[in-house]
Image (cartoon, rainbow, N blue to C red; front, top):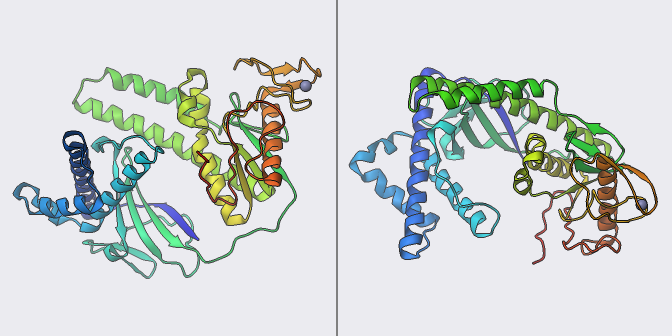
Length: 395
Ligand SMILES: [Zn+2]
């Protein structure tokens, strides 16, 4: 099974210079190739593919003013063209937006495949570096595993990370259990479970947010292209990194717990970007980073032999009474609890939704993906993901 282990590392001065230059070249090649592909399409309606951009790279390396491209490892430059290719594949398949140009202030990354690094005595030697990377090994790689690909990443906050991709042959499947759970994105809480449990954001989250807003205000007041603006930007990036760390850590603990405790987990397949448009929801949803949450559940379910079921996002999980199936017309976002006009049951909005999601998930696992929930006029289809395997929606 393919896994990625991520560590912080501290480059030497020499390594930092080389890596910054490599990342700069990666950015340049990516942007030039993207410009070439865009131009070819808009002015001549021609499609440029990976092979052609690769040929372009060979030409660029011969140009006088681009000689510096030869001073870094060629592997990350080739890899970025491959990444651009998959960005276009995703765009043409309707899964992603048109690729954007890379910006220096967003940091960047460089991917090294087997031929561009050495793995010796548990140390990483990158191409053109004499010393190994000084990695902070926060946890061990699985026994006998060697990295197949290494990605070096520079964050906007200035921190360096290295990701090691490995093939782990160990079977981590757990004993089956008979519990299952439905999850709903909370508005007031992060996630609500069908058991009635509500999970809050990590501690100290609001404090960081307060700091972030202040730092962002300072940033907007600073003059463009000034030294102070760079400083302010770094400060914002550092706070954002802290928020991101605490969120990811929180999500990892939560997803591991949910996957260990339950055989089947049912979630709504939300299009996060659609939800973020609603300003009231924006904070809760983007904080919760539902996409990352589902991604973690997906791969952990696969590791541990559990089932993740994703149900259609247009299923009226909040508006449907879990007791009698009555669907109310309207349920504004500020309504935290309500009484069913048909059977009189009192519902907590989020818990009722999570229970509905679980109920639909059961129908899906028992009867297959084509079944619609009982009787109501849902427009969407149900999608089923078994142990992380994605099935395309029927069109
Ligand atoms: Zn009812």
